[in-house]
Image (cartoon, rainbow, N blue to C red; front, side):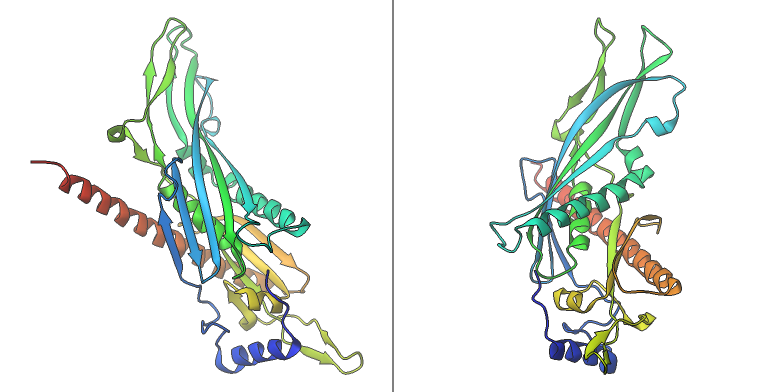
Length: 324
């Protein structure tokens, strides 16, 4: 976890930003750090990714799938034809000793809550987890349907760089986008039939994660105002120019509050989370949220482009490997 800065260090960082518009790592206010992503890093899972943000944020994600079958009335609404997704988040205390204690357990629960909220509010993604339906011959008024239940395991290996939430959502979406899904076919039987899996490589496909959300987070940095009577810093309303995207660890120690927003590539708002005690005017919060929505939508589009290029490269290499 970041070390608390002295008042002199805080004043230096604020002066750098106020006078030159630069942050401690040289970025401008609305610029995010670069992200490095690797996929298919866990061969025993259906999908996986490892994401690095900055020099110290390191997140590993594994995806597992389970086919769920159930009956529905033939006239059932489309809302009943959806899959599900569940998350677990764990900070690796072996890799980073600071990930220990009650505060880490609280952060794990908060990250799971944000992911649950963002994906529960993404009906298009959940609808993409629906597979197929078959009208039962023994009961024409009943459909036998199947969908995917997705289990996402997140392991945070390093988080001392600040803003671990965005790194987690990026790793989750990258793993989902490269998750291999077996094909499903109907097998008749004396009892009526059931859905079966065919996991041969030529019949598998990638999970559609184009509607999965990403988060973009920012911090409100209050100007340091010294109270001459108490010799303590006063908390003041933050101005719009004091909002920064993707705060690093040092900037998090300056922040009065944080704002995290999840949206998809179409800029549909999926979740919003404000934390911290700094009072912020509503118009400033709305402007900051709109900035976060634009950033998360852009990040979704960049990831989709990266995944499409990756798939095209793999397909080209597989064709080149065919003899003759």
